Image 1 (cartoon, helix red, strand yellow):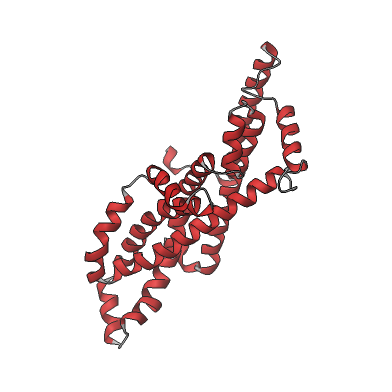
Image 2: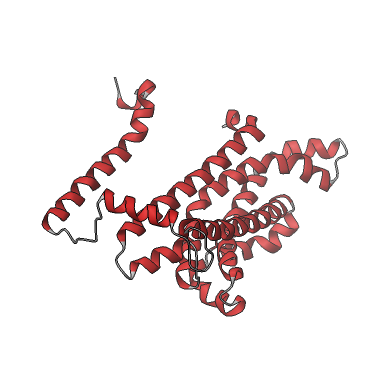
Length: 269
């Protein structure tokens, strides 16, 4: 039997968690080996040290907010990334449909959108800090500017996938431009836009952490770069794992929304 024809079958759940188990075992062995040579080693903290650090972050209140440190950082980061992605999604949906559906606006805006999408978002962070200062607006703007061009171009492409025959039929039936956009194009692109948003989550978190590391007094990225100065790996590693979990949950929520709101989409794929 060829490897290409083999399926996991009932072993699928075990295979999904196997890489994580292996990674944990490798880390456990490496950390114990380093601490056997140097009990004060900070590069690979033991699971006991990580557990104590997590307990402190969850239980100890922040001096300014009087809330647990992890809670304060998580709320701040989630608020920023939610605003940034919300703006990027709205802009991507509107401009993507306009450029994909209306040839006149495609000629006007598509080259500009393509050019903007090639600008490294992190390179313009200093400009955003000059314009917006060190407040929340600069961080939200970086996420929106970083993600929106990709969503615009992807939504434009998805809009252009609609067959010309279908568009001619609905026009023959008397549909106006707005009716075509709202009743034909919008339902077609919405699940695909959410799929593109899922693919953008990694980049969005990268922009968020970069902005928080440079100009912030709270947030997950801020805490990671603050602890880096003191080599507090027992704090950094749990924060990295927590960010990964949050990103996974966001991806899962979007997948559930797509599956329940657009059940035909997965069947079509």
